[in-house]
Image 1 (cartoon, rainbow, N blue to C red):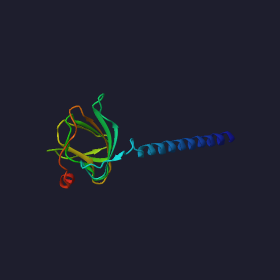
Image 2: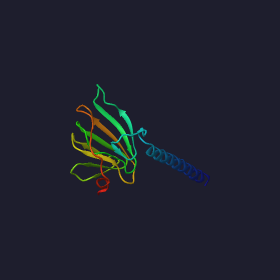
Image 3: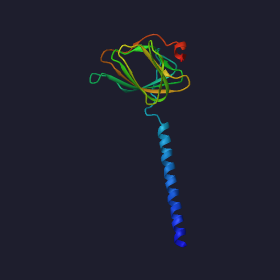
Image 4: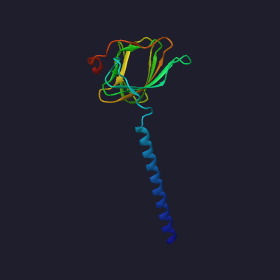
Length: 161
C-alpha cells in the first residue's frame, strides 16, 4: 500500500513538473512571436508614402553588393506611391496584413510568409491593410538604377476590393 502511494505521488510530481515545463515553453514561444524580428527603424518623412511608415535599412547597396535590404513597417492605411524598380524587387511579408498591386491587376492581400517578386520596371504599390500594421522586408536590386517614384495611390484605388 505504501509503495503504491509513493508511486502515485511520484507520478503526480512528474506530471506537475512536465506541465510546468510545457507552460514555460509556451510562454517563451508566445513572447518570441510578439517580439519583432527587426527594430522598427526611422520614420520616413519624404513624400513617397501615405501615412506612417518606418524603415530599418538592413543592408545598403554599395560597390561590393548592389542589393539593398530593408525592413519596412506600415501603420494601418499607410502605403507607398506607385513606383517601379529597374532591377526588380522581392517583398517578404513578416507580420500583419498588407496589400500589393501592379498596374492593371487586382490588389493582392499579403500575410505573414507571403513572397512577392516585383518584375523590373513594372509600376506597383504596397502597404498595410486598412486595419492592420504590415511589416515587410524589401530586397531591391540597385544595379540598374534607383526606384522610380510615380503618382500617389488614391484612396479609391487603395480601398477597392
